[in-house]
View (cartoon, rainbow, N blue to C red):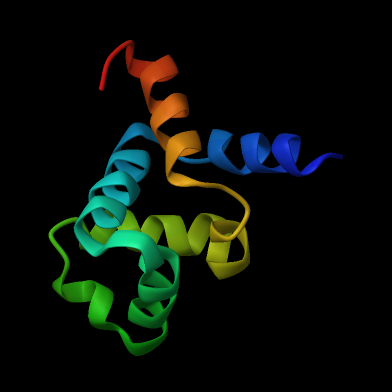
Length: 86
């Protein structure tokens, strides 16, 4: 399985709310958003985020290792394909 197909498989397990939460988090936290989200998950700081429950569902679904397999542009593309606009 290629890296791209692994990322697609991972993203297909997430719902619209989870994808939207990840995009918002990434845009709010900048270039190192994945590292910051992993640290927030590890410390429990993710509870203070606006999309806390959706971010926890991401953690419980794909885990920290799944987060490393895709980029922000991939999230936006998947969400756009599902909703038709973003």
